[in-house]
Image (cartoon, rainbow, N blue to C red; front, side):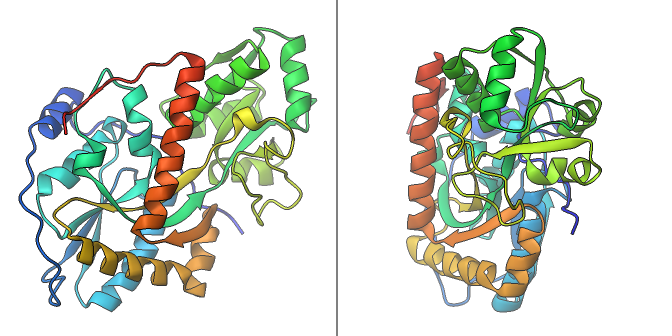
Amino acid sequence: MRFKDVDCGLMGDNVISRRAVLAGVASLTLVRPASAQTAWPERAVKIIVPLGAGSGADIGARLIADRLQQVWGKPVVIENRPGGNGLTAINGLLQANDNHTLFYGAAATFTVHPYQMETVPYNFTRDILPIAQATVTIAVVAVPASSPVKTMPEFVKWARDNPGKLNAALVPGISEITFDRFVKAEKLEITKVPYRNIVDAVNDASTGRIQFLSTAYAIVQPAVEGGTVRVIAVTNSQRFPGLAGISTCDEQGVPSMSYEGLAGLFGTKLQSAELRAKIGEDVVRAANEPAIKQKIEATGQMVVPGGAAFFQKSIEGQMEEIRRTAEFIGLKAGKIAAP
């Protein structure tokens, strides 16, 4: 089975300028929440995805949307808005000012922003509310097939024996900040090589120009199947059934390289608590359907659905982990739009 290409980082061509995105988000105001009516949805529902078509988030959103469309009896349209480090899609959600517009993507789209920007032009706690968790993206550590290492401890030793000689490629966001923690915790000297498209890094890892790569498994899976790249660890807290025999970073005694790729559905205060509960229940039910679950798992994701409270708790855990990581590596949070 071949996985679809997934870009779990905050990448993509900017479709509008950064300045325009920041200005648009900063100037937004929301109207008072509408109560959940039995007639909802009254018209088509739009789900904005911060990544391009074919990404893991896009595929998961479309599979769930197809089922929701049947349940709700109204069209559910996916709108891809990649670029702007996730702000393009966030801007689209908030500017819609509409309880029929939702957002589907990684929680890290929001949780890492305070440590990537001097000023965050929106307030996650005020402006955006979790509705339902759907999946956890499987992320891995991979090395060239020609590499002498097959485990994380072996890589750590190799890097220590070759300070400043190894190159790493990371998806901007949670994988990059986690890598910085890993390097500091293990006292390593590794050069980070930036990529606009992480797929290019897979090609460079295949030829040995990159010695360490952390991204979604679906991104590296074709190279793994082709025998040019080797997966040495899963960064998630649990093993992935599709990677039999590959243990987690925690299990290998290198917890500093562990992180989760939480993904799900978000809304705004325009969706009342009653409406969010209704949407969340429908999302959880859809994600748990065997046919949908099987297709989502085929994209390198584990189906771990839960309602708003479940998703909120998962996000809070990730936010605290990122806060501790930022403190450890000396990264200060930027200013956030006032509540």
